[in-house]
Image (cartoon, rainbow, N blue to C red; front, side, top):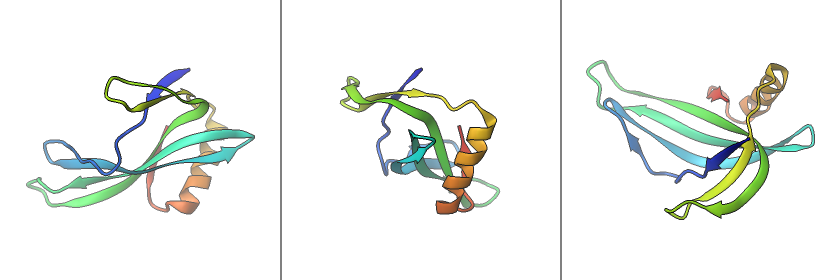
Length: 107
């Protein structure tokens, strides 16, 4: 089990060549369990090699407990179970890809 601190939506996190930001947070049902996922975009806008963007989906895991407390900044904290079985990962990737085609999906 791991703690997951909810991300701030629509706030860019800068890097040397651009930024990324989370756009939405959602859940989906899989085999009787709720899966937490985040949709975001990485943007290259400060690179000598050009610009572009990449949509992505990050899957922290199965929700074990939902917003049971907060961190010092007031962001809710969940407990999640990472999804480690490859067969489950592939099936969840297919579900997510049907809604977010072209997004890079990571666990």
